[in-house]
Structures are given as C-alpha cells and as structure tokens.
Amino acid sequence: MGYAIPVQDGVNQAVYFSPRVYSRYQSRHLTPREAICLQKYQQFIADKDVLDVGVGTGRTTGYLAPLARNYEAVDYSPVMVAYARKAMPDVSIQQADFRDLSTFRNETFDFVFATDNVIDALAHEDRLRALGEACRVLRPGKILALSAHNLNYTKAFSGPEFDYHSNPRIFAANFVQYLRRLKNYKRVGRLRTTNSDYALLNDTGHDFACLHYYTARSIMKGQLESVGLRLVEVFDNDGRSIEEGEDDRDSPSLLYVAERL
Ligand SMILES: C[S@@+](CC[C@H](N)C(=O)[O-])C[C@H]1O[C@@H](n2cnc3c(N)ncnc32)[C@H](O)[C@@H]1O
Image 1 (cartoon, rainbow, N blue to C red):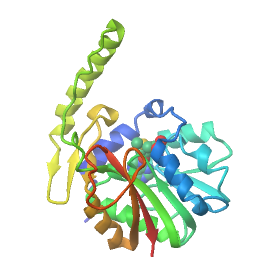
Image 2 (image 1 turned 30 degrees about the horizontal axis):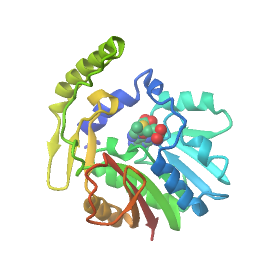
Image 3 (image 1 turned 120 degrees about the horizontal axis):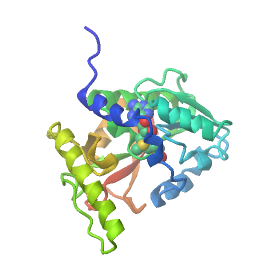
C-alpha cells in the first residue's frame, strides 16, 4: 500500500505552495529569542556547517550565511524556493522536505535551524521522521535549534478575535481580516483534534488556514530523545531560558535547543 498523505499535510501545503505565499514573509529581522539563541550557540555556527530548514524567503539567511563556513537552506515549497533563489542568487537553496533530507549525507552539519515552527506543519509520524532526519545530518555533539507551538499557551485553543481600532481605515482592514479568519476558522477548524500528547489546531498564522501541531515541553523532550537528541535548553517567547515546570503559558511557541548524542 502507498503512503497516504496526511490531511494536515494537504491543508498546510495548500497554504505554503500558494502563488503569493512569500508576500507574508518580507521581514528580515530576527526575533529577540532567535538573536539570543544564535548568539549563545555561535560556536556551532561561526566557520561551521549550517543547515536552515524551511527557510521561507530567507529571513534568517542574512544572519547565518555570512558567519558559516558552509550554509545550506531548504524548503519544500517551490514558491518559497523560487523567491528565495531570486532574492539571494549566491546562496545554496534547495527544494527539499524536512522528512527526507537525503540530499545531505550523514553527519554533515554542526547546526541545524528550523525556526518559526516549520516542524508543526507536519503530522505526528512525519514530525518524528523529520526529527530523525535532523539528527542524522548532524555531527555528534552538534546542535538542532527549532521552534514549536506550545500546547500550554493560554490562547492555543482560541478562535479569531476582532481587533477594534478607532481609525476607520484600520478598523475596516481589521474587520476584513476578521471575516477571513472566521471563514478559515470554520473550514479548517473541523479538523481540530486533541489527544493526551498533542493537539492539531488552526491559529492566527495564515489567518487560521493552517493546521498546526501543538505540544508541551515534556512531550517534545521525549520526541527528541526518541530519535537520539538530548534537550539542552528551552527559550520562551521573550528569549528567557526556562526550566522544566516553569510557567510558559504566555508563549505561543517555544524555541528548543537539542544536542545530537
Ligand atoms: C512559518 S514559515 C517560516 C519560514 C522561515 N523559517 C522564517 O522563519 O522566516 C514555515 C516554512 O516552512 C516550510 N515548510 C513547512 N513544512 C516543511 C517541510 N516538511 N519541509 C521543508 N519546508 C517546510 C514552508 O514552506 C515555509 O516556508
């Protein structure tokens, strides 16, 4: 029997493969916690081999590529790859899937980065496959840094909220966005599921059109360990390194740093 494409995959590919998806990814800035993380783990980046997975339009490329000895970027979206290649013709950007990084040999990289919740577009089994691939291409003792949605976030299960504004033009734009969000919320929201380890939820990302995997730190730790990665530390939304059991309810996602054993 062939591989059945998970429903979650289809929903998210419809968004990430859409013709103008790059227009939502025009920022060139790091978030505070990304900056803190990259600074702290700079020894694994500077003059080292770096892989940026799910690079999108290349927001992070300008920070990593000049530092690294070799910088490789991949994304599974042909639209993102075409855009990024055109914007950064000197950078190696390949169309490849996090679940299958076979374009790279075992133990090729010192730092694998997958920021802005790339992994959460994948269904459960595929998530474990992707983590396994990240582990395989890392050298022993080297680092995976990836962000993932946080099941403890207070608004994880919320629906669209109308953002009132006194300026009539902003009010109108917010209203149009609210209607779009409501429509997507109903359409994709039918696929929401929850079990003891994780939930699949649509959220403000792409106006509720994506279906994201949300889990908690303890589950993520076990998933990393199951493929041969040891959790080193976790950054909250503000870039604070937080301990197990600390309150993380204000963070929509967490940035995990793990070491290949
Ligand atoms: C939220 S965007 C983040 C883009 C970029 N990392 C950033 O921080 O600006 C998620 C990106 O991951 C890519 N992506 C999602 N699933 C992927 C997969 N299985 N393999 C490779 N790329 C994937 C999407 O095409 C999209 O470009």
